[in-house]
Image (cartoon, rainbow, N blue to C red; front, top):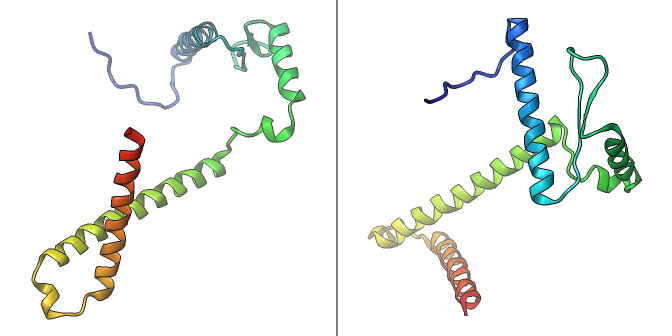
Amino acid sequence: MGRRKVRHRLISDNSTRRVTFRKRKDGLLKKLNELTILCDLQACAIIYSDYKEGPEVWPNRTEVRVLLDQLSALPLEKQTKYMMDQKDLMNRMIQDAKKKLEKEQTHSRAMELGLIASSNVLKDADHSEDLIKAAEVVEKRISVIRERIQGLE
């Protein structure tokens, strides 16, 4: 029996929202428990909700306090090394998109230069700059292939 696609939005019915919260929280804590067992690491969870007074902590308050003390004992740069806010996330996504665009532009240009080199258009016009760029692309590819061959040997 397949599941239907879940649309992520606020559940309007309060009782359904409470049941969904409880089920998802239990699933999250189960996964966290499995992660700590299978990977032999320390982890904790602090969950604030409208359904209980104060935070819920997993596995227990003393272990959570120990982990938070260990975290606060680290230098600030190590504490925040993997933390991101919305601005950092968007900047990283923009950088990744720019890299992907540059890669696609390089590939497109290489294909274009290959078409120019293989056609008879070279006789009709001066494409010396294009040929120099094509040679650079070919040299880069040859060096990558040589590195792969050396890595395999």
